[in-house]
Image (cartoon, rainbow, N blue to C red; front, side):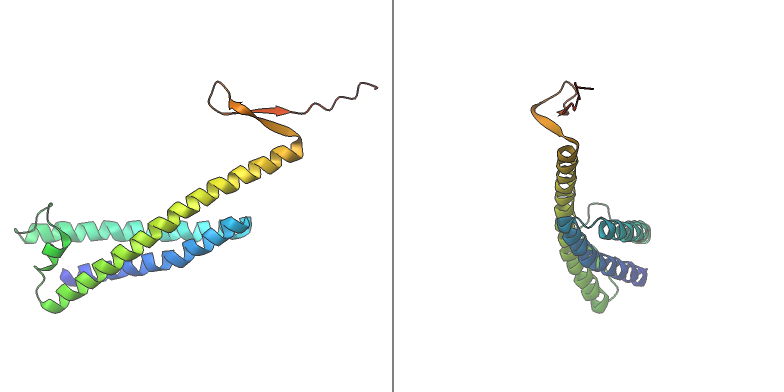
Length: 161
């Protein structure tokens, strides 16, 4: 069981490590408004997210099994305390290393994910602005009844027809 936990945490650590350059590339693509690259990276990101969700499920199942087989394991227990129950020091040290690495990678992924969300919103606003400019639409400085922007369009009438 401890070997399974090491295996799952190792796979999670690798998956989060793979997510970092992917999100960095997505951030660059959003800054450059490279739609093809954004689409490609979003598909890879979706696949990686599904993989991480699957690994997280497996990790929770292993923790549940550990709790069933070891009465000293409870839901309020911290990971460091759980790791001290490992059968030997080598496994305990490896679990601590993986947990520290995972924590660092998750923080990095969370930051990059937040950045890409902000950039995606900005890219959408820029796209909307340019589409409005091309179509002759202007956004009023007030909001409509529904809370959305009030958009007016220039009327191009030909009165001499």
